[in-house]
Length: 358
Image (cartoon, rainbow, N blue to C red):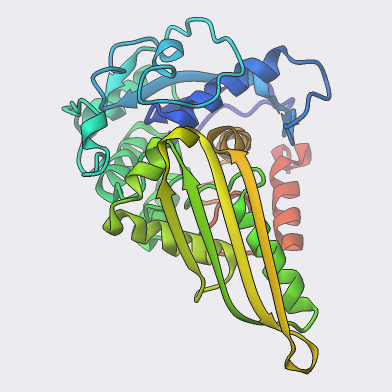
């Protein structure tokens, strides 16, 4: 267990699984906000439980693309096929991207864009995590990479790391993985990260307010379009199944339809169209159409910054297993959904300095 310090000082040493667009925005974000003036837009928690953004350190990174392996992380985040918006200049970090675990991490749709290696095993990953003093391992693997996500979860357990599952793979929702992290005294958060203000949040809010006002949902859909590797990967119907499942849970409409199209010129921009058909007073028809556009990867990075700091705090407090308030707050498909007031109480207890001495 990490050393507990009464003032919450220290670092949050982060390992990255997958050096794609999300990793790029996260690495840039740490640099941007560490240098930014107080009150800079876009950051919900400049300091969380005593950990500032500047306390986040990248200590390990893994990828299977030969064009990224062996390069400094600051350089690798700009390597093709990454196309995330560049909003900060990141100097060399002294973190070399290591060869990762391949398994099912590269799908048919993206195979032509990745010169795949992936010769590392679980013990190789665990050894590097231990050697670099990594506290929290973050999974940015593509949609559908269930076996690879499990391999990295195993490596985190062997290395004594917390694990943030940002993708739809079933990790936190798996009783077996949840029990193993609990037994090891290591925090776990998942599954499938929410965006800062994404289509799922907007869709869920619309459905919630309609239900509270007695409007009956008849049908709804969410159509997404983007030009990054995540959208190309989702053109594989089998891989898209897991994304549809977490999207449906996140927006609270099991019967809703979710579709995703790959449009290369959009690059890392994401366009979402949300449609709601419902019945209002007297059975009269009620319709809503919403269009929104965001930069996809930066919209996720702020939530990851919160996730790694929350799990570092959980390590400080000796908590193991799924951290339910964190998962319910930050993930589309948490194993235990919670009401907003329950989430608030849970996060307040986690971040309270008094919990260090109780």
